[in-house]
Image (cartoon, rainbow, N blue to C red):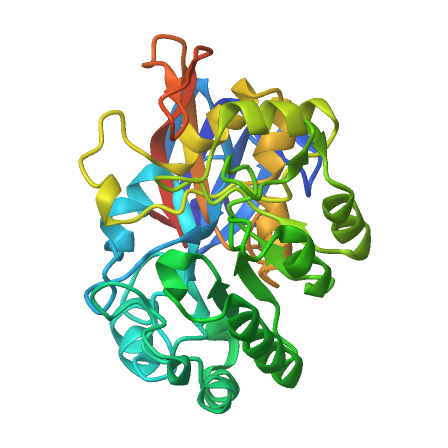
Length: 375
């Protein structure tokens, strides 16, 4: 390969890629929208060289649960403004659009964003476009039109988002909502991105056994009435679900991340499968910013190893989204989605949703590359 063909080279004090086994000083060379070379011995000439001796270079971050949108969703934020500059190159929408407004979401968000966006389509036909909750009437949970949208949507639709909390279902029966979501999932072969009831009128042990291998339970470290713990231990129904292949995602948001719950779970060896922000419009202008690097730092403060946390914002979610071999890796020939982060020992304390604090520093974004273009 002629060195003049390299568009740029990024050198960092640490290069991490679980897929390629990289974890030390090194560099990544980019040509076009592809990674041309990566590793400790990469030393090629390029049109531009960027040096970050005190930073970490890893595959572009993948947020498994957030709210990228441009209108049409009461939670949505522009992904190119609020995710891409913070190191996130791929984001899964948790139900911002349903079957009725999916075409607009495809045109205005998925196809029009520099950020790679995939949709967990809302079981509600109207997604999050209604003013207070997505399920106004039981008829909103229309299985047939949900299935039709998924069949028409192709790769842009990853799966089905269903939340059975009272905030989304109101007085509707959460069991019926979940049953309809499962029917749509079975008919399409799609996974669920599932938010549990979190209260005793429909306990977790009535919902979690219904989930299948590949389904994702989000909000997993919440401290609501029905959380993962029973008498301070991981509940048997949760362990059985993991054994069955159900996945567990953070979905931090405004109400679903508790340091005490996270610390208890991690201390018992129960690690989340993915780390996600549930970032939406109430987080705009938050100080410090609510983003994936900071959310990942909270899991490290709660007891996860740094390596385990990095895998859960890169290779793991890429695999679960069906994009392994294209993203979540620094292997040559794959998409040049890159994130450069720097650890800040002097960052403000880390807080959970109840204001409980932990010290410990924080990863902060330095540079994002999306498909070979520096953001």
